[in-house]
Image 1 (cartoon, rainbow, N blue to C red):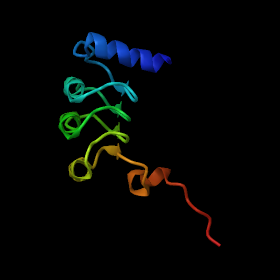
Image 2: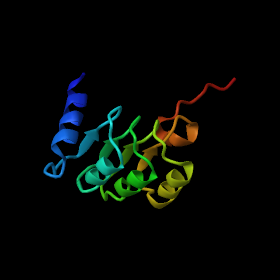
Image 3: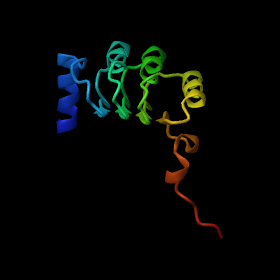
Length: 117
């Protein structure tokens, strides 16, 4: 288990409410649920959040997307619905949301250009 994964486990076990200055939080491939996502939603300084392959659903997703400084948010591999994703993408133009592996989920500046013949 890497340092990032260990930190994620520590935060889940100890609770994250006291970590008010966190800016980046990588909890991918952990047992984060909607309850944990709602705790994360109290961390108003978070700008980067990775919840890839967690147990977060629309309820937890909705709570976290209200973080005012959140700019990059990774949620593929969850059960978050396309309807919830589309709602957030429409409301949060200031945030890049990585909800899947389709071309529309990759920001324009990072899309790989194919050579033309």
